[in-house]
Length: 364
Image (tube, rainbow, N blue to C red):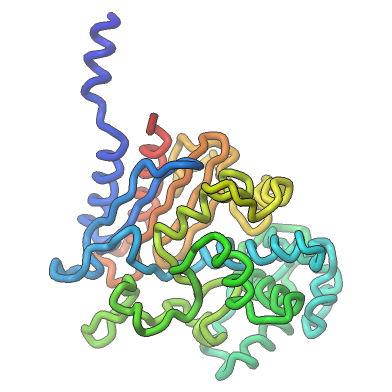
């Protein structure tokens, strides 16, 4: 029996091959033309590879883990905004249980005096999910005003409703407390110290050739143009979207969270208690800024990540999941919004993410 078991194990598909197959299936299904996947632990990378091409043309670039720059979309909420809030909390300049109005006096309307910064982080503010600011405002100041005066739909703290508006407000809270723009604060206080040199808002034209395109215009590939139009209306810098990064930079970020504030060199960036507080499960599978693994469904995280896993996804086709119980991170970066060849692009991408996560959890 032992010989038979060993014989069977010898024919099991290696996790790296499973990841390769899952991503290539996603490309063949038409969900995205290119991708980067990085899987690793607190002190090592287990798998790092680029797949497909920047566009559906085989003559376009092949995505690269180190150099390809991706529009992170909603990963901005955790990589830039939540991390900036963590820094301000540690500096004693920001209280999560303080009213938002203390930091943003123009956040006015019935019931808003009860909304706290913690409510924003947990998406329990009572605000609706979305506003088409790019259609309703002509300037960034007008767009901000629309968010500030938007009425609450529910009593603060009564329900979890994932909302871009919450993250926009979080970004403005950072700016109010820090006394400087969100992009500058995040770069100075988070990205620079971690060596995330390819991460930031409003990238220069010099890096455009390395940017995974997110759209087509009259048949021409568009790179370097932000996909989220609300972030565009807000000037390219917002708490909810607008950040760009590479797979390699996000590895540094994920490993810091896995080590509860330390980088691979042992340098401390955040206190252990701060990291633990921000990734602890709260109402509705929400932590502070982060989403916590919903083990009742397979979408995005598969079946093998632990209940302690936390992460986030981005509309453009990006995701990052970090599992402290398994000592594992899973980064999947795609340009799903670039001319998908299937109407089920997000459904296919979720299947790919789940398969990649399960394969990653199988590394030994």
